[in-house]
Length: 221
Image (cartoon, one colour):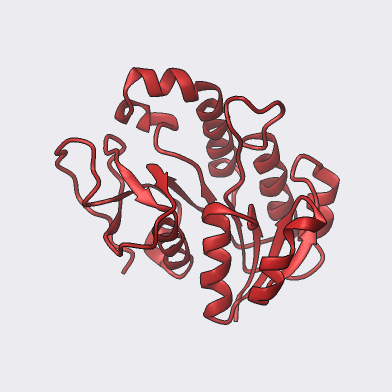
């Protein structure tokens, strides 16, 4: 049983990750921002902690409370949000994990970040630019932290049930859509994959690609 600190656990990809980890018997310490977000996670069997990733001292305290095998972060914001957690919140989590000696950190960002910007049309880059810039800062902070990392950049997110046709690739020029539950599956599988260590990977559904790009799939086995 692994002990996993999961930030962004109350909804979206983070909640799907919590479902998978608790189902396989891992200990999930789920970070939420308010007491009102606890119910569903407690029902899964997760240990819920309340705090704001924008508060560095709180993140350091929560991550240091018990030995952890990994930290997973799916936190982020929208272009219309005020102070977003895309960089600052993730920086606090990364620094806290490094200080606590956590052995592994998985960060979920987005296609369009870093060199994968070339995969998105100009209109999308213009709309998402501020968020993507912060996500790139978070990625760079993680790769420079000394932590063993995996960065997963999903394409456009959909909320339908998992399809089982999602893939990873190291090719930054690939774009497409992917279901949140399938992203979660890739994240959980990456936790146990030596091949995913210190990799930056794009995640798309092979049946929902934009265009017909040629690329190599990345195997976690």
